[in-house]
Length: 375
Image: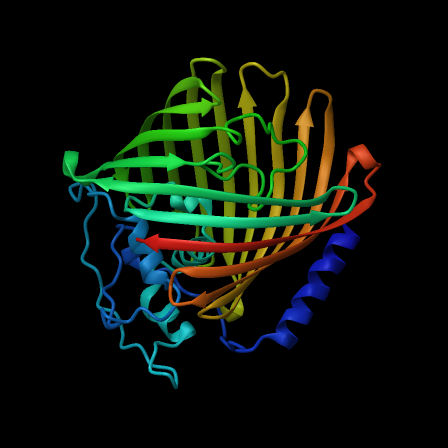
């Protein structure tokens, strides 16, 4: 633990000194009443402005794309404040954050998840978009692994636009499990990661407080189809102006593999300078496996500008039969929007300590080029 804390402090200090656009902000963002009734304030950003990264209001609105039953909630959105502009005429990152994140820590977390293209975030974005990734992962003892992945979401006009078609290439997990960039040793790797997936999702409800969806689809591992049915539930609760609790539960039944359950419990804490601390416990239960795979993870998000952000991660992967720690990974993710609003570059150096190697630190690094169209 001392090593992990020292790693975090050293990296945070280095990033603060090297940031090209320091963002001095005092205090954390408050949660307004509008966060509890699911409404988001309007934006004063010009509609033709497409030269910046997705900002907090875009991230929050993206999640709230399916029709919402307003009989269950009430309240009118408060008008947004005017957004000061940077020297280049674009809204300032921090000023935009204060103007648009009336949901406080919830809005900040939503913006960061959207910026890092988090799979749990994308699982609730009911809009048409195409994401292409080219990854190159280098690790000591393992050599170089290059992979290309794609996922396509199509929002369908039927059923009040609550229906979404999804196509995921092999290697694309349809939801985050125990890590954001690469599955740890204890993750059941044969669960869909080597399969092409085609599915339809129907959103019963999809707003900042709750998301409920049903899913039916096919996994294709070679020429053998594996039909599945599933349901997903997500709830968020603002504990106070600084803390937000998140719960995600997904059940899925595969005709060839049986029942699967994935659970996530998370806490987000807003920090000064638009930073966010996240603690998560997430796990996987498989009917055909005696193990329960779970992770205890810590993340610290640090926006450097409206186009650049860092994520510091401590990832711990466990299994229960017998109960053991399979892997601890220290990782730093640097992500930058390098062209307009659709091209991103990411670098993620890491140290992995695995039980199979007696927890010897093994260095590695991931390079990622990502393109996101639509949305």
